[in-house]
Image (tube, rainbow, N blue to C red; front, side, top):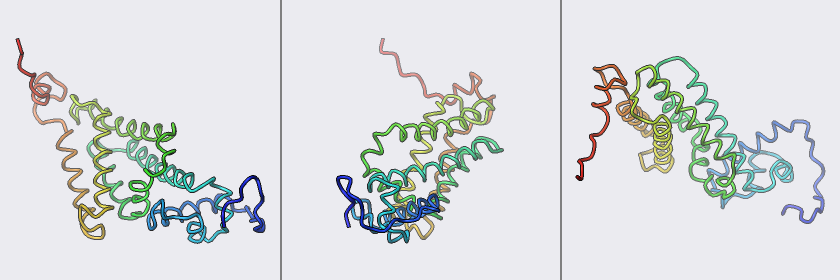
Length: 238
């Protein structure tokens, strides 16, 4: 059955919307499973409705088309991730511990919700409107800003190197997470059901902390510290 066109009404009986939020969430969660299994192009609205256990027409009550459904899945999953980032950033502990917590959380999401991770990494890029929208840009900015705040506080306390730009560190952390999670989703980094997640978590944390932790010795941020951490100046051409 196709969506009614030109303002025509569906011949299906009206659907009760007494539990509207719950029904919408059920559709979104079903969409995650179907998108992960069939892919964006192989998925049909009817597949989502069947998985959610709702009438076909109800999906169109909430979502204009399949692309908007995928955009909504993206928004919901990123909202969950941003809340977790904020909770870690606002929590106790040194900056290195918080950065490690971000890595552990992302890998744990893969362990518990591999379908959602697959959709976010492999299918969301198939919705052109998604990456043209201002809301997507703001979402990425908020993620960078939150992680960048952790880095900046660590620098202020002398825990992390002060010669690194906090936003560049944040982008490096999130970029490494994205590619490592993609490697797990696709199996490139090993069997997702095996020890791939543990290896990724350990490798990410060790590499990240070895690169950003302030060196022992002179007080962080001192001239001696800067001389030890900054690359040497290029030779003069004169």
